[in-house]
Length: 249
Image 1 (cartoon, one colour):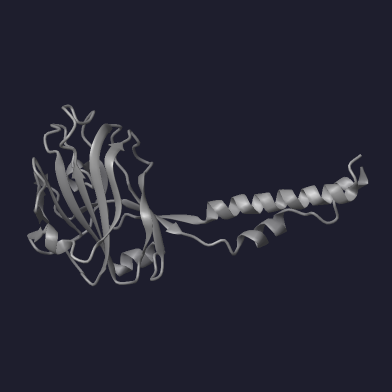
Image 2 (tube, rainbow, N blue to C red):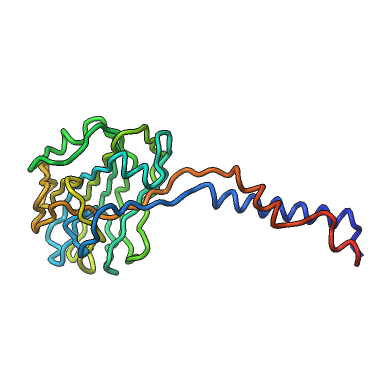
């Protein structure tokens, strides 16, 4: 028979292990922003341009999220963003290798209302938070997100948030993908600039990206740095150590 104190020690160790595992899971929080009206999935809204013709090998996108949108999702000043992800509606994929960059910027910009915007001007003051020179895109499709873990967490400081993506798959031979990437998106006014082309575009449009993509922004998932303060109390209330039920055996 195992001595009572040993059983108690094992029970305590088991509780600590459960708490540690729960703390690890709670260390990240996942929130989505899908403001607006759901629309038909569309390749032209990005974050990566891949139409059924597989012709354009370069694209750049700019997305704007207002403070109200972020707050509604639980993203408040001081929040650290660990990863971002987007959702496509197709099972198509590409082995790459491609260059994929993501940039972020805290900003006071309230709308993307101009007909066109210059990429260099848009990205002034932005931080490069992700860069992969041999990027592949999996077949993962809705309802699952394709997540990109940032090189270092990005701290949201308030106001609006701008996110920029840059894609270059000029290296691999054709076909560069198994088919179109149709991204899940919603209609929300003045929140996108975009362009896909045979060379890296320098000017982005707010309305056309080969087809009409006016006011259509892809849904996004943010992985946020979470907290673990509530974990011990929850587990203590659900697991009883004292008295040890095994002590009667």
